[in-house]
Length: 91
Image 1: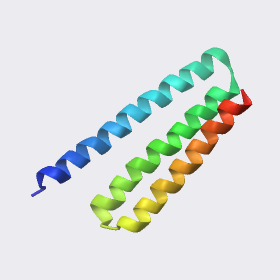
Image 2 (image 1 turned 90 degrees about the horizontal axis):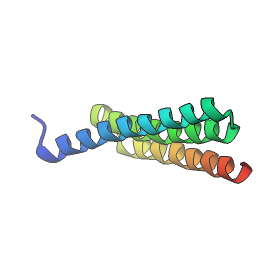
Image 3 (image 1 turned 90 degrees about the vertical axis):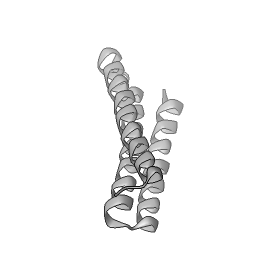
């Protein structure tokens, strides 16, 4: 049986995945509409951040490995933010 806090965290991870995916789709639609390369890079950065968060949740819940999961999520978040910063600065 899953305790209340674990269920809440699982729901939050699913929401992060859905909301992150929605923002990525909006950014990709903007890229298709404008053909501005920075919008594609913003979408890529958001994909990395969203996947990092989701994968961390999977590792934590099913593998019980917290340190590698946190390290992977943080690494993908840093790379994702760097890509977004590069996209904004280069536009």
